[in-house]
Image 1 (cartoon, rainbow, N blue to C red):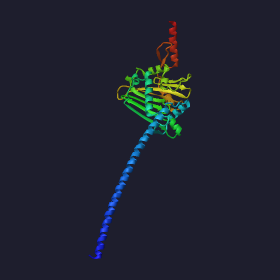
Image 2 (cartoon, rainbow, N blue to C red):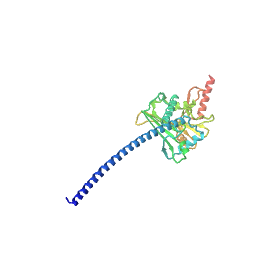
Image 3 (cartoon, rainbow, N blue to C red):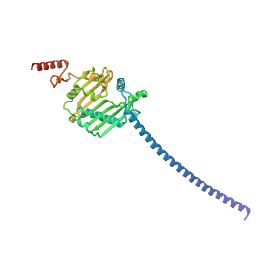
Image 4 (cartoon, one colour):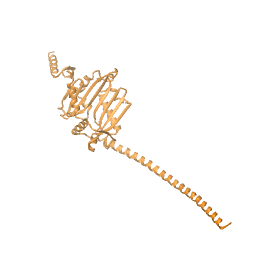
Length: 326
């Protein structure tokens, strides 16, 4: 064999060795890299799990801390309430948000609403079964505030809107997020579930007993010199704080698709210069000669339905004279 052929064979052998050697080397390197990547992936997965668990724990601790802080509850001044009422009535861009420090959790808001419903039930404003653990099968809750305000104002203006529904009963409450106070409510149910035959007479009786506004807004201490502003057959507007804060309640009866008549009760707070106050006054002006229910148990022990103060005065004078002549 010539030297040329011999060197050619050696070169071919070396080339094949280099190719196969390089292939085996690259394969081993790839395997090693794969093992390293798998090891790192396991660490990342474990770290991610730990991070998620830690984040959930931090969130739980923050919620528990907020709930403990809320137990102290924010006490709103009269000026705060006036500011809140006017801002809510004025309106603006409503944005949803999560509970902040010092605000009610969803669970606390729902519980506060149920307690308030039970208190109305105890005063026979609502049916008695609502205070006996009545199970609403649909409950929704949204926490909102009004945008375009400072951070402190947005926190002060936050409110929970809680809706409780079961069968034909619907109750929607507006609860201030920092104080837990119910500022307004809309209650709708069939007439035959109401605890009274005449809602007008019942509301007026409860009002004259002095418990209506105290039950609706227990966080407001009514001033002694406060006065009744408006009382029609379906509207009561009461001054609670002298010329600043007013409580109102309105009830209407309507029928839907020829079904059982429904009663809707709306109630809330307002100030003298916002649109709610003005609309109530305008609605009362549109009522033609409405009957008003007055009670004077010191004279007769029974209610008297009259048209105005002059007729009431005359009727009571006649009743008093009749008693004196007996």
